[in-house]
Image (tube, rainbow, N blue to C red; front, top):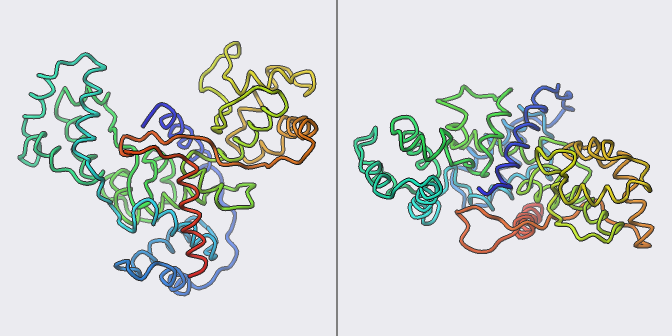
Length: 364
C-alpha cells in the first residue's frame, strides 16, 4: 500500500468510527429472510460452490446493518465479490511469496538492515516448526501471509523492527476490505469474534459483513452505481470530490489531479495542498476567507459537503465559465499502486469492471 492508500485507510477508519457512534435509522419492513436468501442465491452465478452459504452470510450482513435487500444492493455486493475474489473467501494471490519477500527486502533496505540479518531472521523456527523462510516460500493467500507476519512481529525482534509492530497485510477477504476499516466498524458485528477482527476479515462471513459496510454503509448523492464502485476503491466520496476538483479547475484554470483528495492530511494553514491553494484563489468571488475554506474542505468526507456554501459557489463559478452544467460526480483519476498488481490499472478500470458485472447481475 502506497502513502495514499495508507491515508485512505486512516480516513476510512475515522469515518467508520463516526458511523459506529451514530444510531442507525430503523429499517423499513422487508421481505422474509428466506425470500432474501433465495433472491441472492438466484443471482449468484451457477458455477459458484455453496451458493446458499454465500446468500445466508450476505442476508445476515444486510439485516444486521439495516441495508435494504433490494436487487440493486444485492447485485452491487455480488459484483464486487466477483471482481475482487471470484467468490473465494480467502483468495490465492499470484506470486505472493515473491511479492512478500520483495516487500521485506525493501523495508530492510530503507532501514539500512543488512541482508545477512534478514536472511538469518528468516532461518529461525516459527511457531509451526517450519522456518519463517519456509513459510514465506509457501504462502498462497493473504490470510497465510498475515499469520506469518503476526508470528514474526510477536516473536522475532527483526520482525518488529521491519514492520514497526504493524502487520503489512491491510486488506483481505472475499471483498478485499480494509482491515483498519473493519476494526473501526466492529460495533454491531453479529457473530462471536473468533480470534480477532483481522481473523474475521479472512473468513467468508466477516469479509462479506465488513465489505458490505464499506460498499453500502453510507449515503451518497450518486445517480449511478459506478461512482459508488469507484468510492469502494478510492475512498468514500472520492467520486463526488473529484467532480468538485474538476469544477475548481474550470473556475480557476489551474490544472489539478482529480483524485478526490481535497486536503493534504496534517497540512498547516500556511502550507496548503494543491486543491486548497486553487480554491483560495477564488476567495473574493466566494466570499470565504482561508479559514472558512479550510473548514469547508474538512467536510469533504461527509455527505453534506456537496450542499455546502463552498461547493455550491464553486460550481456556480465553474458553470458560468463553462456555459454548461457540470457533473457532480466523476470517477477519480488514480493509478492503483498495490504490490499485488503487476500491470498498470486505475480506479476507472476497477469501477467499470465492477459496473459491468453489476449490470450482468441485474439481467440474471
